[in-house]
Amino acid sequence: MTTALLEFYPAWKHRQFEPIERGQNIRIVYDAARLSRCSTKSNDAELGDTVAYIRFHPRGEIIRGTVVERVQKSDKHPRPAVSYKTIPLVVSVPHDATQVELWFHSFSQGATRCDAWDSHFCENYWFNVGGLPAQQPPQRGWINLSPASRNG
Image (cartoon, rainbow, N blue to C red; front, side, top):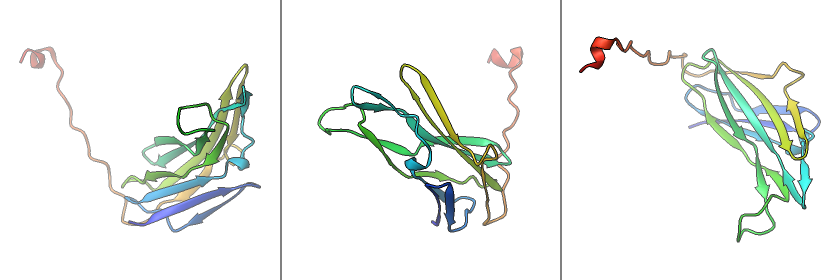
């Protein structure tokens, strides 16, 4: 199985390695330094997250997932994060997708709320999907929920 790689670097640069194909995976690597994280500190703990949103067209299905992982002082007991590090997000491309739309949201909630977006100046990042011809998702049949059908 081929995996396309999308890397997002500091200084607002990004690069695609390998074509994105239906039925395959996309691996998204986002450098947290790219977006001024809305990080709130409380008792030496860092609060917040950076999330990728992936919309597959034409269906419009949206998948989201974090692209950072908490770094803790000790692995022995769950503790608040002292920092964050980049982790890849891997998603499967639907068989009917023709394009991928992608954007990022960094946020934290402490005494105040902070939100920051990486959306290519509100246009989002767009990538074409190739491979085998797009297939329509399975059609769902009608379900008869008339009162007569509920009596069994």
